[in-house]
Length: 247
Image 1: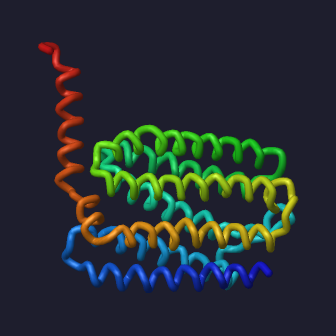
Image 2 (image 1 turned 90 degrees about the vertical axis):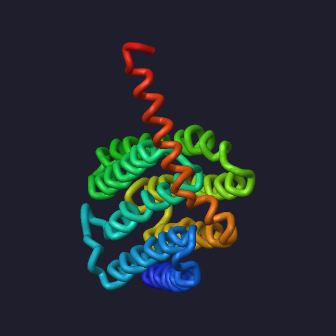
Image 3 (image 1 turned 45 degrees about the vertical axis):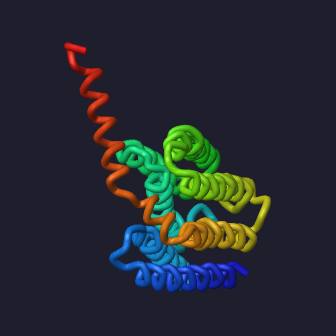
């Protein structure tokens, strides 16, 4: 059952990779091309890591259980890219996007430590990782959302849809972990793999499909680099005024 669902996830990522690649080619040299291109690399990377798990290259027996640590190599690259993509759509300041991406990498790496550790320390690291996730969740609901509201209606609507997809799906990951082989052993490795495969396909292929389905005009407006640079410049000027002794 485990191998079957690894193959399903791999095939799903390959299909997504082909679709996004063709979409990026169709939009070449156009504003907004970076969105299908980013989804292409996200699904390409995920497909490669799923193949390593199928071949047993990123699978190791630890503490009496089989650990698919390739998942964490996948997530450490793809989840920050998802936050970058939605941050650009929201028009968020680059400095804040970088901070949230850093928190995301911390969340994934501490989740890996939790997976490699034996009880009871694995639960401690799971709590630490979940704390980082709550911080990311808070950023999506506050800074990201506030920035998106200043954009036009279509972009804000796209952002809200993507934000809700991420929140709904990402909440499921720590739940699967705590119920799975690394946690309380409520579900088997096979069912755990099924859950992760479905979540990964939805969070990567599904997310990307929603993005590119927004239409070329909306993506062009969302990728407006002048808007992001203007926001960053405004933020820098405000900081300089606050630090100035003559204000």
